[in-house]
Image (cartoon, rainbow, N blue to C red):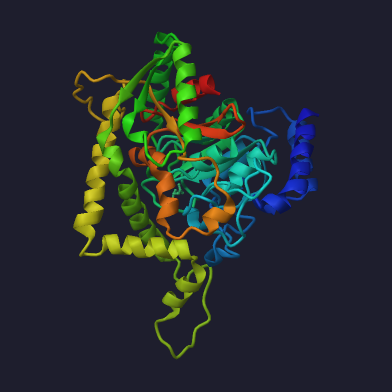
Length: 476
Ligand code: GLN
């Protein structure tokens, strides 16, 4: 009965809000959703999310509907296989999807404006504001009460940023914990599957279903390592007294941060100190290069991944003059991809070209490695896949706490009139470091005294995901 009642509320929110917010680009029929809920309700519940409704970003493959990445290129494309996470949610957890969520094309963007379906609007504001991107539709679906949780993908902040703008929880797990099989690739060394919910316990429930070894994803963490991580978490929880060492990383204090954001950050720190946690200022010098490093590595990987959209095998095909031999690829790609995706492909191919490869791509890989070591040095916990590092006498901490974005959600008109793509890229300065290092990071909503909602980011050592969630509950 409760499940049915909750489902009806979600469905009525979809009916009344989705035409304005544009969060879901396809919606399941209310009758089919309710039938499935009552079927699940009448059987023994298998997991905490059985019979709960969810939305998923349009880059997760399903077999019964087109998966389009909000791109002209993939209109009508139906995948022959299903993403592992979708199979786990449907068959293992008996969760029920309400529809596919809007996104920035191929997950490239920060405001959910680069989409063939039109921008998604932020439900927190009555005037049109950015929902954040690229998983904007998923964040909005949760924030507007259209579902209990949603799936997104986070390559450089695409779950955390929209969560911050929309006032919900958005979690990016450690790289490799959740299978990427059937999630259309943007930048495979950075792509992770993330979860949106209104509270941390729901995020945990979803993770307990989708975080599992998958032989179909070559980067999926093994069952042995999962067990080691679980044991380590249990040991740390047992030996801890609920008080943590918190790091304030100096390099995250950036000029572009608005005053709302910096005062929310200090309010959170005061609360934590009052609760008896120890605060330390820490330094990770390579963070200063995180943004250029990300914007070299991710477009390079994207250029390679997106080369498969050639107008031949699947998806969009331009109509070209038969006489004009060899132009199908170029015309198809010019028409099929939007401006931001084309820009990234050009940038990526340039970085991989013989002239730039050594100075750009290889240098970026070196900086990335140094950044991972910087993170290892500030965490008390050793990286489970690396040799223990030599520590100096600088303080080491359990978690890093920073803002998730440099400002609150911008006006849609402002982002639509941005002159340079860099205006959007700089918003990623606080989220890309955790992506480059592959570590768990979460955005939790913090309500300020003057009624704004701000996302606070918590980062922890690779594999320390469960304790990052423990700690996030303290902040909320
Ligand atoms: N905003 C970043 C970008 O445009 C992050 C995208 C993402 O995480 N998918 O690349």
